[in-house]
Image (cartoon, rainbow, N blue to C red; front, side):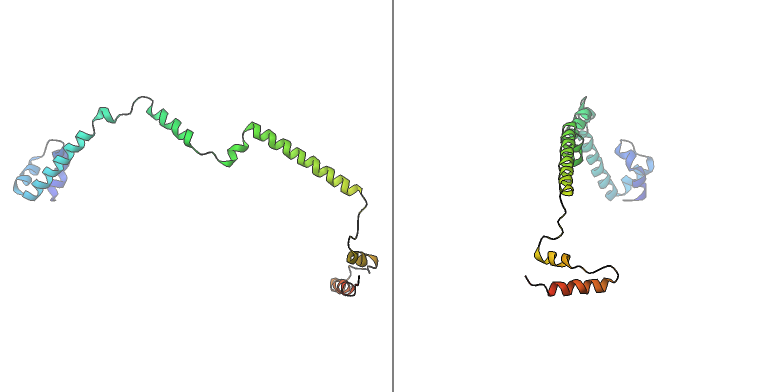
Length: 150
């Protein structure tokens, strides 16, 4: 497409063309064919885009917004914000705290049990002083465990 056609094409498609544009169309058959095809296409597009049919009915945007909100997936965190679930979660947590507190109080009040197996009892009976040298402490424990016989 030549330069005069590029500059005046919009005006031509709207129904008016400048004198330079029309003179070039008369002189150039390729540009004339292409401009006529574009004019036909513009007419077809105008037929499709009737202003009355493309404008939405009243309340269209409100209906679309309501549908989008209804289809919006809720996240896992929105469940925690519901008041009924929040109260149930609070009661479950309080119950768990009370049960764990009761368990800890009963365990602490009973006599501590130092050794539950024979090997632990053996290590607890004659425990030499530990704490001065960690390597020596490990060696002592290993020797005592290897010499243990039930």
